[in-house]
Length: 146
Image (cartoon, rainbow, N blue to C red; front, side, top):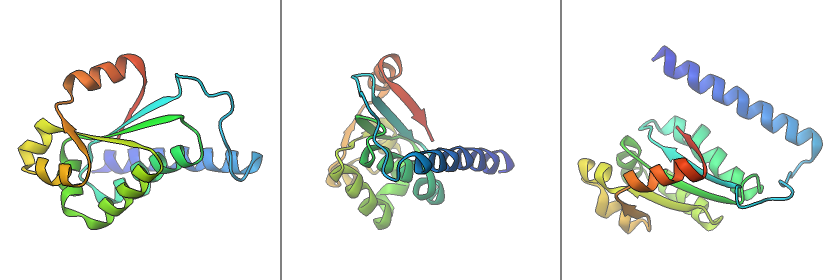
């Protein structure tokens, strides 16, 4: 529990520092000279709603909205699939992310373990086996996990 809290605190401080630095330069920063390497894959594994709202969703949404990354894929993996299937607030926020152009995928093997594959599909999420896909992402793109 202490390690998890420390990790969340450190990530939060890094994020706040990035926000403060960018806010001083430009209140609505855009990344210039984007290339094909400006692809980010966010792998969300936590079953903790607070982590989802105050870190994972917030960063992913703002990274796309503010142009920090050209293309973003959001992968729902493990306990996060169960949490999302049950939480209307997270579902609404996910729709907002999709409206920004974020691609959303979920691990079918994980969703099947929780019995939520159909629910995630109903939410418009591409539910598929992700082992090979994640391996390809790791080899070709920027990947962060939460």
